[in-house]
Image 1 (cartoon, rainbow, N blue to C red):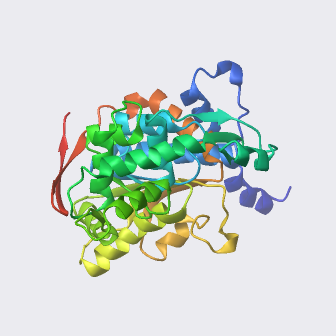
Image 2: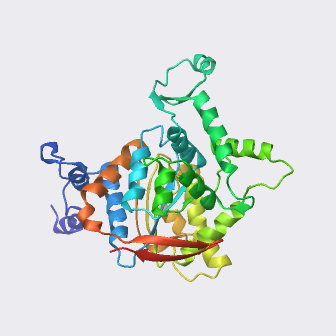
Image 3: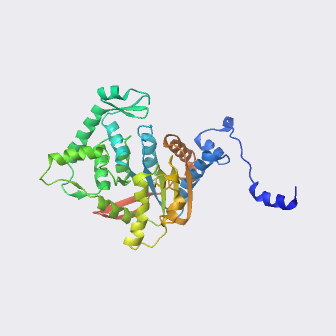
Length: 354
């Protein structure tokens, strides 16, 4: 081999792929460690875990945002999401309304049933069963949940409020220690849903609206959501984002940087840590599949951000990430929690605990 060729090859051949030895794997953390020396989406997922752990151990105490889309509750991830909040590895949650609705649906006694994507959907319609790919949910229990949301909302003050304030109210009025919303309310974790009406929670609020037409009532103020998000970003010395899927939560969290920097003269970088797991691809130009590098062109992700993306479906990827975090908890525990002290639409944030 010519010496010139050998010298050119050497930088590319520094580290070999190490086969996964499952006989030596003792837990999800070990598996994720093994993935670091593999390839394709396994290595990408391990890199995502590394980004998350770096954010948790950063001495500047970044505020960690978790953006959620997709059929995560139907996929069996309710407790995973609840545990991430309970452990304190996320500080702010931004979700589609559907995920939060199905959290409430289980709180009032609804279940998700194992089914098949080959079911006769016309027969399911006759039985008032709804299908989410290979999962069945009870339409009759959905109706009960809608009515319960409307009933509980009657106790909310008759004034405008952000989705954050309203969802905290729901979390405090639906008592369930396994609930995402109830756990977030108990732990003081803000939960936003900027497209809340595009869900069955919106149906419950429509029932509330119908009962209060022409009278004083609660109003959902989505622009106040923007202002509250900017308040959090402005008071955060550094931020990290974890995106499960894409959609409105991803776009909204990223747009918060633009709002804070341009409209509110915030002087700071974009998100300093960023990871996403998604099944979408960037080729079609949509945000859900867009790369974190693309977000750097907008200033939404810092030019020096630590970032990683795994093209993997959430029902597989998220439990592996959560399991890795739990097995590696000695790396990031204890982590000080953030206390959010709200006065109207303004907030003061301070770390508490050890």
